[in-house]
Image 1 (spheres, rainbow, N blue to C red):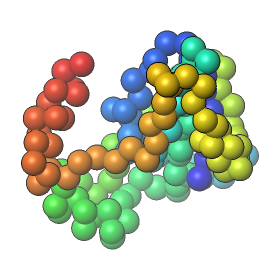
Image 2 (cartoon, rainbow, N blue to C red; image 1 turned 180 degrees about the vertical axis):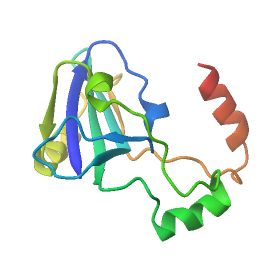
Image 3 (cartoon, rainbow, N blue to C red; image 1 turned 90 degrees about the vertical axis):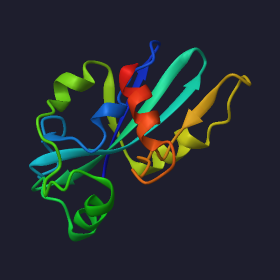
Length: 142
């Protein structure tokens, strides 16, 4: 896993990039050819948003057997993850690679104000879940 930390005073909308792959153009020290955005942690503290993007470093965008099995119930049946992300451009400026220990410490930080919060472990709703399609339609319209 590769963890990238980015801070922004303006909230980002990275959710549509989940499960999208692209060439590894942000971490040359990792020899994997592709990065697949697999999770996003977002916290709001001290008037800023703090994002941790969790990338799966891969040599191919082919889905595993388990992912293919899940696709039969919840996806489009594709054997590959979507491709085309330019991660260096998408991340923009002011980001840094962190390790899992730094990620853990960031996620342990308690909110300073009641309005501060954390979003972590984002997962898609299965298509069979009641209201999933309506929720997806609403979220994509925003």
